[in-house]
Length: 168
Ligand SMILES: CC(C)(COP(=O)(O)OP(=O)(O)OC[C@H]1O[C@@H](n2cnc3c(N)ncnc32)[C@H](O)[C@@H]1OP(=O)(O)O)[C@@H](O)C(=O)NCCC(=O)NCCS
Image (tube, rainbow, N blue to C red; front, side, top):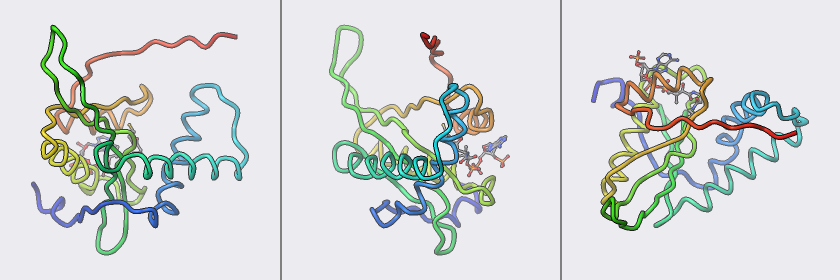
């Protein structure tokens, strides 16, 4: 771990974090709606959708179902990650295993490229390992090139590519 990652403090997210977490997600939500050709939300609807979605994740991803972590620089929260835990049963191909699926990962603009995302992913991996997990995975959008470089730098590999066609 480099010195810049050590400055980052990681803690559990709480419902009190929702007011700053939701706008971080909202920015990407609105960009990705445009990529999928979905109509733009009004300001009010967009704010509500982001709050509902992140609020739902904070309620769901607790205990055995997952977790949500916040990164702080000084006393300031600058990023978060939410993770769902899966327990996959054994079949004739693989033994039963536990994995963590990163659902959301966001770092505030102005605090990127300072090791915050790296510190969050390192904490995710520690937590998944502590649940006897052996895999961390995530889905991302092809346009999020910076995120692809980030995950590659963290040692993640592309293992599948999904095709979609929207029917009229
Ligand atoms: C992707 C994201 C979480 C990375 O967080 P971060 O705190 O900036 O990441 P780090 O500072 O730990 O970056 C570690 C390394 O990843 C790579 N990296 C990160 N951002 C990069 C970028 N924009 N372009 C190229 N490489 C990048 C670099 O190798 C970087 O090391 P370096 O700064 O020494 O060159 C952040 O850019 C973000 O919140 N993006 C918007 C939301 C998003 O796309 N989330 C992921 C959805 S799947």
